[in-house]
Image 1 (cartoon, rainbow over the protein chains, first blue to last red):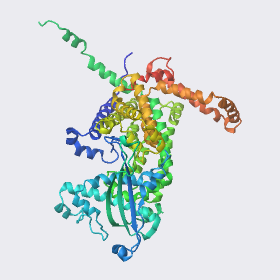
Image 2 (image 1 turned 135 degrees about the vertical axis):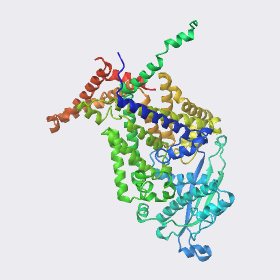
Image 3 (image 1 turned 45 degrees about the horizontal axis):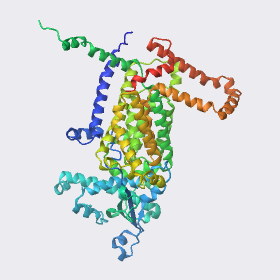
Image 4 (image 1 turned 135 degrees about the horizontal axis):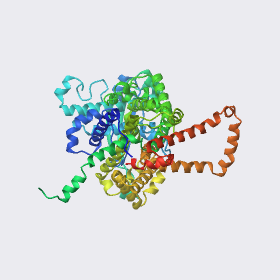
Length: 250
Length: 387
């Protein structure tokens, strides 16, 4: 029996959509695959193409598996701003440190259908930690210092023209990425502390903690204290949010 | 005059091979909408997981994706979720909740296969916009279904086991060549994406020293975030051998996956290995949505004949047990006495099903030029489409 004949429109569709599909799959392979010289050469174009809804990455639990516990801790100053600025000596009231991640993960234990809120602060940690590690020692020191009166963390407004005079383009990229994620961490810290202390929250301080899972060979006799690594954000003014945001966290 | 050589003779006989290959490829794209049963299973399973995910997260949705997620704004504003995909970034609670409820309704319609030509692109837009509010909270399953929904827009996802299939059977609407071409291109994209995901996940893993030394699966199981059943994690990782086997099987199955698809037997081995892996991840690591979405896409690689057999077996198990034998006649009697049954609505569903099967037979007859092909025979014909 003779094969069915293809009509004109389906032929055009097959040729054009087929070519586009093949190009898309090739681009996906290049974008999501391990680093190669070809990928490096195509990276700017690939970044533009995969920005937004097409974004993807498939290095699931690789090359290193998830091998640490990640925590976000936060505390707040719940006095007036000028009192907080004076610290203990001025009678400022500080909350205890809250391990937000540990609190969230309690709901996930023995529960495979836990909601996504159980991972909220953990993913903030996951995004923040690598960009904080990209900072130089000097920049890390600036980030860990207190900035409570609105002065820029890195000495200059990173979106201003002066910033490109102070920092190189690659440094500026790193600092801007860091600043965005610091703002996210401080924002979440503010909302969490406001849930408990309401409008009294004027300053927040955030710390990220990583504790290594004991090595495989130590699993029958793990160390009593796991190895800890810290990254800190100094005191920052509590982030201001609109009513709708605060209502969602009330 | 040059003497004939075996190579030249062979080349002469193969002169028409490129043309025949092109004919075969074109015929594959226009003759049928391949893997329609597998796609139906993928639609139902991934739609159900999506629906479940939206419902499980309903109580906290406002903080995760709604106005309460405003603290992500400095980060998400540069991720490229612009236009309609950024519609929720500054939305208040009312638009957000309307959006969320519409997403639930679309996921339900998608699962049932209702108006999927319209529902699938809308579900992609609604779901992607929601996801764009808080991309870091997404897991691999969220990423995967977002990409898959783009491909499914091209496809006839409701050809089988759907409300659309019933409607089409009643209307006896014909299938166009253009629709078949788009469906089959979409299928190629789905299969290619599955292969990319597994191959690259495997390639990344072989680069890691803990995967190489066969201990990698121990670590997430002992973390607080993924070891959600600590005693079970301790038990599973107590001996070195199970940890080593699980680590190596994971890597090997993922890297080998695209190559194992070429033969029916190896394909089944690969699918079973990955199904086992997904089930383990779902239960032991507490990632049911991720695993379920990934596993549901693997359904397109199972032949139609197998799916028809599985559904037939399930129907048998559900209807031919002592409890069902006692309950079904009562239900049927109850149904017969209802006003709807008197008007014929009680039997219309069966009738629609029969019409659907009859139409499928007629379509199969039209395509294959034989009256002997029933729906199951057509399912058997899908085997070559499974890559």
